[in-house]
Length: 125
Image 1 (tube, rainbow, N blue to C red):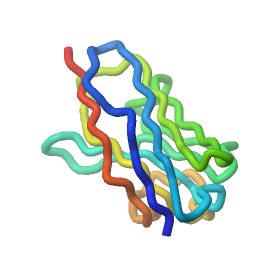
Image 2 (cartoon, one colour):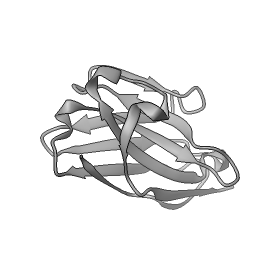
Image 3 (cartoon, helix red, strand yellow):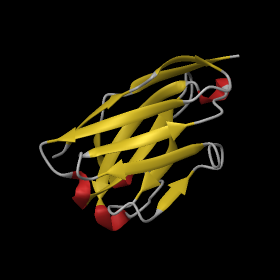
């Protein structure tokens, strides 16, 4: 299985930007669809963004569309989430996930069987 480690979270003010990174090890991510999910306090985990194995297709939750960008660098075995115009409601633990490339840009968490430990993002108003 691929091991995933997220980084880049922190405390920022509303309107700021952050870039999350997800570094993979043990296996190359070029064989995987990759995604970001998040869990806000008191809420269930929700889909944020996904990218297919080549980076040619992406999918976003409506709540982040136009503000967040998911990208990947297969040579560096890393996936990124560029977050712009952050809002207090973006506060959550953000998780990186890897799944079979056949799932392409799925927004369903059961399709991802490798997960990182998460990184906290807090946006103050």
